[in-house]
Amino acid sequence: MKEGKWVFYVGLLAVALVFSACPARADLFWETRSVSVHIDSQPDGSSIQKYYFTPYAMRVDLGAGQVIIVRYKSMKLYTLDTGKRTWTEINLAGMPEIAGIDQRDLSQMLGSVMGTDVIPTNKYRTIAGYRCREYYVRIAIINGEYWVSRDVAGYRELEAAGEEAGAIAQCNPVFRRIDIPGLVRKLGGFPVRTVNHVLGGTVTSTLTKIEQKRLNPSLFEIPQTYRMRRQG
Image (cartoon, rainbow, N blue to C red; front, side, top):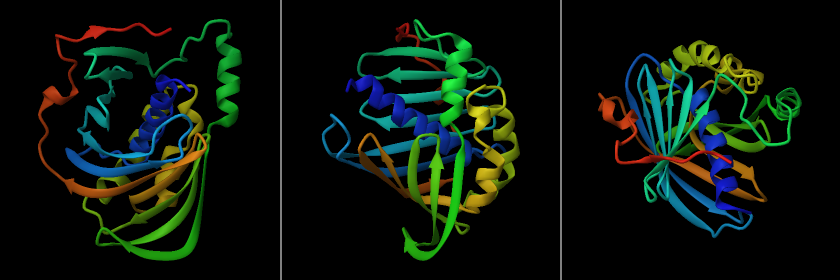
């Protein structure tokens, strides 16, 4: 499997997690430590992922030089490769273009696998100092176990932003299939640990740091020295 497909799945997961934990009324930063095991054609390993949020944009540093930036007003998603110093642009208000596939067929195909399921369990555990409850979660084609807590600073921002994130997702014919406000309400807490099953393996992410602080606007800009790489 090519590296690009792995980045796509990790990016899809990151964006979905972002939409389910998206603070819109204050700047917020958090870090997770992610451990991947038995992922198809990928070596086992770990990385630190960094999440940055403001009322106008978000950024996710996936590790290994891969970065995602989303600007809410323009509904544009940018992927950056800091090693190659390149970037690509995706219009979240429309469908991605894939050669040989009609846009309506693509929308129907992707729409059939999108959506979410959230099933609470009666399991509780203290993780990273937070009292958490386990939920079984499906986001599109990704299944996993989520340990969430109401005690995390920033949970109220998450709760308040659910409706706004849902409005953003409604602009995309694929992401609108994900009930963002419903996902936030059903989880009822901030994801402290997630165990997602994807590409034949698992990706386990655990919260290591969270801070409410003012973020530098330059984090959400594309460096002028980077060159655009067209998809396809």
